[in-house]
Length: 300
Image: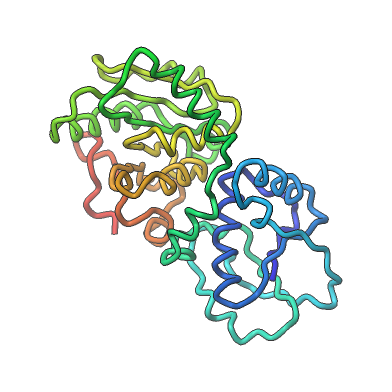
């Protein structure tokens, strides 16, 4: 089986991780081999990047270019972030089925296969070593008790109303630090992630905490650095695939320390999106009636 990605746009590495993780489990449930069409350059490029990044990267993206006469197109997974049950494809007996969706951004596709997905995206030693070397340089003279990470995303998300904002960032930092201090964590460092460095320098968190902005140019190393060295994570741009995977691949004992902007409507999110996209044990944050950031108790 394959997907109909007719525009040849694979998106970011986070988008490709969504696509391959969900399609892997869908194919496994249906006892079908998943492949990606070699006519699209981005699939070939991501296959090479995955081989460099992940231990099993060469097996994640299989490339083919079959004749159209063997392919049956099926409407499935059209909405980017809703869950479409793979079991409704069980009765299809065509040699190759091509689903019309492209992104499959719902954890429910692999909800019961967490360990398998973690293994699927196990990083290569070269990536790990580069991240460890970066961490050694950053924390050489200071060892924090807790590392609070904050991921930002701007650029193309600004027009769509999905970008990180200073108001939410500074409010969420204040809220999460108070929450951490309430469980007697005092020595808290803050690490900013994001490609817009000028924007990161505009952030003014509460005083008394060391601030770090990792200078890592390789996206895979950047991702692994966050996965390994963050103790908590705030996702300020809720539609960022990169931030989602950073949170999802963090060790299980840290998974309850992931906070996200629940959209407040501006991210084109709705109840269905939230239920299918964000992990249930992640903490939704919003602006309350007094314009402060706190937990949204009514997210579901």
